[in-house]
Length: 171
Length: 249
Image (tube, rainbow over all chains, first blue to last red; front, side, top):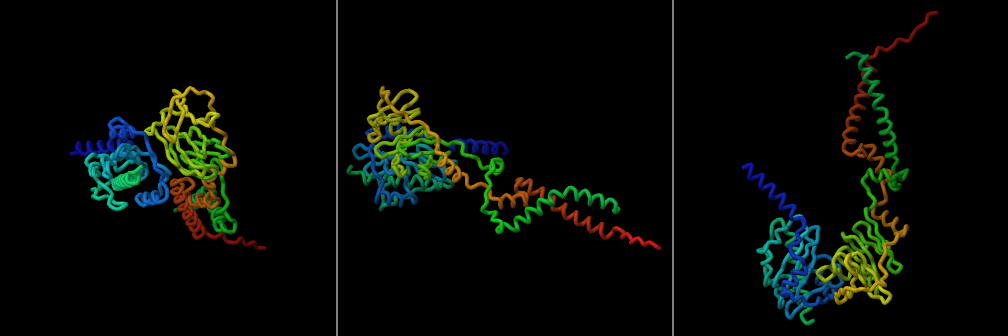
């Protein structure tokens, strides 16, 4: 029994250590993967006026950048966005196709807790989600105990990507 | 207990407690007159005292001049003159001002800011920014260049194009000496005002100046003060009163 407890303790220490910084995929590689190695030229969208207001309504805090870059080919856009989970910024890669989430992935995880959001089965929940109104998804995302803030951060970023895809649809 | 032993203990306690009694009494009187002496608003910034309280000078203070604007990095904070504009963990490697935009080169990104210090965007590696960058500069014809450990790049930040270049007539951004009035003011704001005399006296009075050990030590000293009073009373009541000598004439 003592052995199992010790093994559990040691494994937790290593999991905790590994969770401090996880570079899961380089943002550039994520963009390449979505566009099958043919990365289009990055476009930019200005974040001001109502756009800024709506984004800040989703985030529930101010948005610091005045413009955001994105990659677009036909009806697919890709967004690389950062959002703070608890203390550190998490980098997400979000691909939107025709107003539905095509892929949502954590690219760099810097928090010490809540790393469970890098699990594929969690991230797959976002697939095919779309906007319901301005600040809601059309489907419920199951939370993860101990990773509430990271789950919230990912949900917010997916909402922003869907919103920005919507407003850049005709650009 | 023999009276002579109690007298010896009382004497020893008196000698031991003397400096602490003086400290407690003096600091106590000063604390009683904190408002009269305005001790809360008087600050001390002695070096040894600041380090004793673990108030350190910032480890990193980097400054660049950008068109009459001093851009300073103090640890993770970036200032435009005295105004804090944003935070960045990476080291500031250079700055350029071009077409009303400040370009700030960090170790792995270039941040574009307005004249007021609003972040326009951060250009990172996944936007195509070359790696191992060490400097940012501009040519006479107002083109922006980046220098990496391998080569120079002509930059078009609007279209995210970074083309290797052999151009050599480039004025590279150089670190400047922080303006003393700005850096002093920034460090002052960064570190706070120092230690107020009131705090120092309170900490000396209750022993916190010497951390939690000081508090425990002064608890013991307090008990010794009580013992000193008790032995004093003991001696007073037990010592046979010497009869006044009567001289018969």
